Length: 339
Image 1 (cartoon, rainbow, N blue to C red):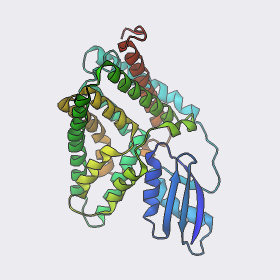
Image 2: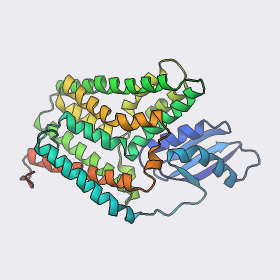
Image 3: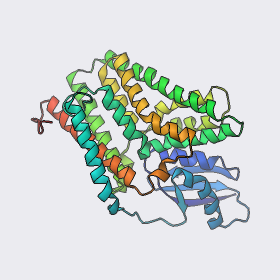
Image 4: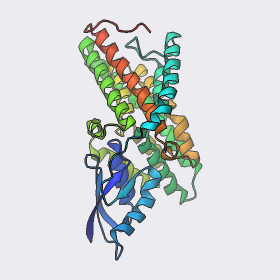
């Protein structure tokens, strides 16, 4: 029994160490595994026989590479793909202009009002589904799919998973909204929540750009044990387990989900909070659906980095205008734009 420490490339949010630990923990030769987002490393204890550390890395990478992670014996220098911005900036600019146009038409409203529409929540869901933070949900879907495929079941588990996810976001989002009504947030409470949403979005966007690795430590996360228990469900083959896994994704540490949950809390209404989270979940459905019923993987689609950087710019846009809007609503500053 020996302990090895390897560096991990590709970790980007608090969910990533959970996914790395979950995937490596399923390997029979491994006894314990502990991944760290702060150090971008993983410590593994196990019995690998006469294999060399390089051979072990090769075998472990076959498990992790499909999820976008790569192990190495030496720390890799962080490389910023500046060339990706030449495509990401124009694409993001077009999306932002379309969003502003929809806002002017009253279809979505995130920029000049503290009231977010369901259309906005749906758009945020789409962005979340193609971001790195949703990769953990995609990894969970793929792992669950492989586990049930061994039993000859392909379609039913996928349908149950998505139904569970949609139902839970509606009901639990409503519960969060109802809790907000009990506390009667008032002007100060609403400002604080709006400010937190803006900060979460800004941190998310900056991390998606992959320019400042140190910023990844600032992303909020639930206690590690919660995520590990969610990932542990994937190995259970009970008939309703895919439904329960879908429900459990509500609690995974994704910054997009957390920002929407904070907004749901500020609504003070069961139905408004629930329908907002439902619209968000429906926005994530197309990409997650493709992950479930095809060979599509988030990381292969975003291999060049253009995908994530485009999402990062858009999310930073959302974060800045949410921040400005919350400060204007609180009377701290005067309106800077007339969009």
